[in-house]
Length: 102
Image (cartoon, rainbow, N blue to C red; front, side, top):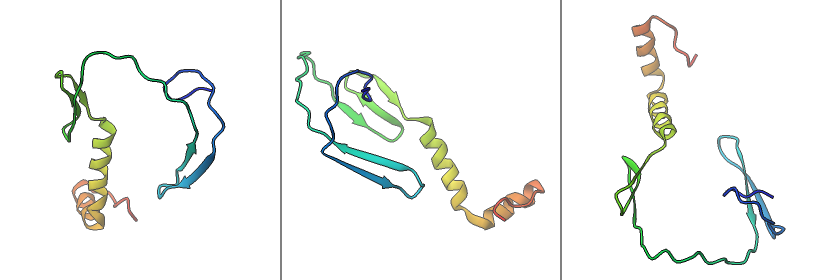
């Protein structure tokens, strides 16, 4: 079986499975399995991670991880949709098209 990290190994049978349908209609499955701990080798260095709003993460060594663009795009679309029918009418008057919410 292939796990999310891309490594092929045997995954034990789950002791419980929970399937949930969210508000958007997507199904999510949660599996509970018992596995043995495998300690990672010591590297001798420590890394601190700062999670933020403009950048997803900034490491203590100065490297930066940008936030995913789909989150910004989804926030912009949500803001646009939350303005409601009045804003749709204003946009329709400006562009000369019918509002799309009808």
